Length: 414
DNA sequence: TCTGGGGTCCTAGGACCC
DNA sequence: TCTGGGGTCCTAGGACCC
Image 1 (cartoon, rainbow, N blue to C red):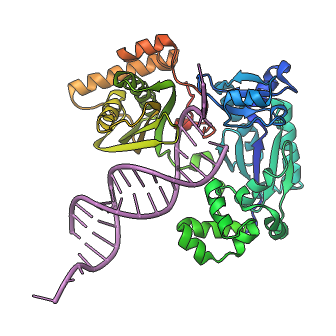
Image 2 (spheres, rainbow, N blue to C red):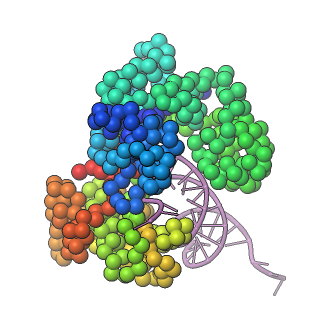
Image 3 (cartoon, rainbow, N blue to C red):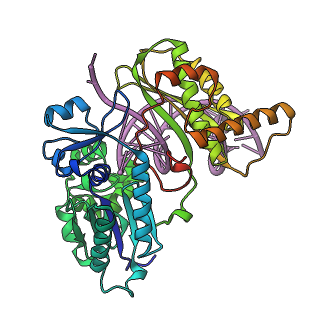
């Protein structure tokens, strides 16, 4: 791995909120918050005007309104963000094919090889900012550094509309003043642990004996040491080289906590159908089904998985497995959230099962998928879902920033 | 009438096999 | 004259990312 790479990290500022403000001039310059459509939703993104009042991602709507009484709530439109993001990625690709889409609003670019065409990395950054602003009315913060770890750190330093460069000879000074918790990979818990050792800055972390870190954190300890030194050899991985997805799942926080088994089953069927449909669309089979439950107290989670002897991707099979797991559980409280996930995946071309009954079932499922693809989720579905359909409960449809522009990761593809 | 959703990776212990 | 050891798969839970 060359030690002379030039890596850029681009972070769209308040992406969802910016897209909404761009699309509706009445929202510009105002405190807005993008939320989900479900009853128990949170702030997905807020505009900088709203952030000035202390409105933050993850906050409950009532809390946000308390902070900012004239806050404007906008229900998120996933397609809009997906579309805009894909367009922006295309724009980035004009500068280098080495674009790693890190989330719906973040990307890494390896511009090492692009420099012969441009006078400097900063020049590329300015061109990209201008293009993105011109076409989408969105600002972004850009970090430029010798690797991804530092580029991401840099992009965070000036927001919004920032440009921060960390040159190789400046790395030491920067790390000495930046808190360790600002590094991507060091979360709340780890930061707290590090503080117990007196480690506050990245510099502290880099100088700390790696043996102790290894003992306390295992493999992560080694990595923490490297991070403290600003070392990161991980390459920028373009989409076509990215690993295959390892699991597919959906979960939903229910409108109210429930205890009734029949009611739980209804939601499990709905979730199984969502998971199965996504798996089938990308010809993925899975052997392991995980049922997740969050209880009414919010803090207690249960995750139980079952690995089957064969691979499945039909909603009915997923559902039956999930119900099987549910029946091994004694529910301790009313249920707040239900989740179904398919993992242990196998990717293969579509092949119809051999036996007649199996084949008929598979063809029926394919036909249903086709109708749903054409007319939207849950146009056609299993019988017991229909009541839910009438009640208008189709899940929250809040897009996850784990979104990717193509393929199975894109939760919202139609 | 608090507190979303989709992912990945790591750990530690147990089963099972050779 | 006690109880090897390595590999693989599975499970539950936790930390982290956006």
